[in-house]
Amino acid sequence: MTQINRMDDPVRPATIGEAALADAEVLECPYPTYELLLEAAPVWRDPATGMFVVSRYDDLRAVLKDTDTFSNWRTEHDHAALTGPARKAYERFLEKGWVPAPSLAARDDPNHAEMRATFDKAFRAGRIKDLEPLVSGLANDLMDAFVADGHCEYVKQFAIPLPLIVICRQMGARDEDVWTIKRWTDAWIKGKSIGLSEDEVLWATDMEIEAQHYFQPLFERLRREPDGTLLSDLVNNVIPEWGRPLNDNELHAHMMQDTFVGGSETTTNALSAGIMMLARNPDVWRKLKSDPDRYLKTFCEEVVRLEGPVQGLTRMAVKETEIRGVTIPKGAIVQVRFAAANRDPRHFECPHEIDLERKNAGSHLGFSSGVHHCLGAPLARRELYWGFKAFVDRIDEVWLAEGRNDLRHLPNYHLRILKELHIEFTPSQR
Image (tube, helix red, strand yellow):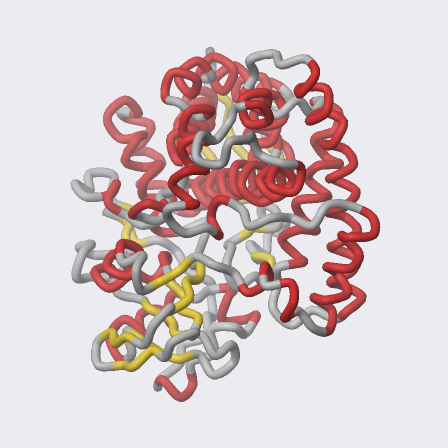
């Protein structure tokens, strides 16, 4: 087992009074703050956001499974109550595009279960299995473009295009539009950040509307000419309880949030984190290289556990409740902090270490749990597996390019996004 390297000088709060989870420098390396919360305040009201942050593994599992107490509803969908920049963004959608309906992740049962059945059918196991030749072939094609150079900027040259091209092909988008779509997903993520100005909110809204007008003709064509693709199924399959398929507002919400952000951005971030970990931990690299058939699946799980692409998501308390003696009022927002729970020493032995022989690595909460377990987890796991396998098969040694990395992440409360990763390597002699 090898200790994962951390930021050289992370913020280390000594007391709960010093904890500041929304601070950009804390988000750069939140793990010391998580350690403090896990031990001193496993249910902590963040003074900067007002959210109740839940950090222990067992508590998160309980919250995620208790859908009677904790709702996935998002206040942004209560249009009549919107004020300020959020109200102006809503009016912009009304004027120029389609107001996004609640996505799958923002719905509660029975509505959620009814909608999810359609998605489960579209993302059925057989279809994911059929994608493996595409994923593995694309991973090797991307490697072919730079492996002989002995260096690359891994985020842009591999981690972004692999999952994004895969999902583009499933959703009818052209390969040549990948970087345009990436611009839209970046804007969507920025638009969900804390503390944005009105101009920033409206800019993100305009970018989302631009994406809507790209995808709308695809919906209309597939309604006229279904073609059996994943997107065709989503456009045309009737939800029995609703007596209709998804409408435009529902499809646009799904395309941006669940598919292109949830289905590509998170995998990009895990791929980037994994190669960073290998470049900084040569003992782990050598062990993985020695027997990838034995260790690669566990490595994929350890990456998601240790550097969770989704650090946390929210629930709303629909009634007053209590967790570990802390009263959570009705209507309060609860932040389920997956990345903290994934380093809870009560569940994971030596939680800050990369352990390629960890027996319970797959029990992490990086893909959530319960009825809202990530719909795209099977595809994400296959993309991680084939992405890392292409790298392990084609590279003998890997290291960080000297003087070219600061290994900084975009400051985001919910996602962990490595900006860039310059690596150098010795190609294998194939």
